[in-house]
Length: 499
Image (tube, helix red, strand yellow):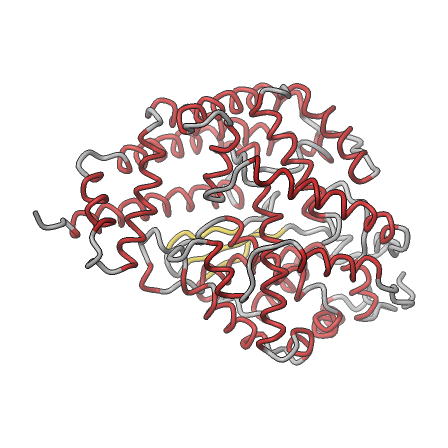
């Protein structure tokens, strides 16, 4: 019997459209929706999740998928898409629709509790919904996994093939190597720029300027604001990201823009022929995070970048920039500090924030930690890893949105992204005749062209390990990152006066 490629294509297109609809609703919820709309939005997302689950598990599709994957004469892109959707379908088939609806409702409830109270340290408000959500996610993991480790089912959703057993030694080794670097670097950090005022509207203009400078196409995208910055594709030709403005710290906004624009450049760089396809995606979250970390750390961590940005900052903030130089801005941007907040952490301490979350969510899924005990466990481990502890849940366990949206197993992909990004930076450095020199000449099209040619255009066509080894010419490993962080933390610091 001939393989029904027409039915496959219509089915795959429908799934892509449903995913885009969910992205529209989620973007609006985070960026524009009034708080009073949370209940109706919860119902909408719950219904959409159920419809998408029903479509994904539609009868008669499994045989078509198997036939496509097994047919060597079908083009590789179609076979790869069928393989990816078959994997997603197999996962979904293990989940009853009522559980899917319950998880979606619990995610909306927890997100609403978090967004409404996080600035008021509302742990007691979040505790009940988050406890129910964790219980439901453990039920989901039990239904999905064929092994004994529930956390592996969560990891596999974001980083296919990752397991706790494989990641735990890597995280322990990073923690051991990074602790002395934090100690050395934090002793010499410049004082924060807390006595200067950087107006909100002008910071948003700077966000657009920086994004445009490195290549983000504002004709195919938008920049908004949200409590937790994120990037989302609402459809082909519609890639959006958000930032967060602190009127006492413009560097936080600039770093966030570089990070989220890195995600967005990846999304804008996918092959246009992958529209309405499972291939219009990264092969894993670690691969996606690598693109954000490359721009945030390896571009934004260079003094050459700040020399490019400094004149525009002086135009927008003449009073705040009084006495500040590009070298001083760079010193602030790359300072090693014992920060409580992950999204504001420097490159050296950042992975310790991820280690903390990896350990805690691992313990939640193994049953060794109750949700009610999260704040105490968080504070104690933060003290051990970074030598500081939160003064409130808002500075600690409530600072991230991920758990509130049921995204357990997501955090490790940040560190994997850092590891991949360091290897990519070494490869770009060789390809463009020196990365820092290219940044100094604003040769961002050359840098983006390397990434687009070696990474972006493939989408999910190639698995992450193969994609990264092709792009960098070296197998995956931690040394590129550790060598970079040791150079950064232990290098003599600039003597520029920073006020």
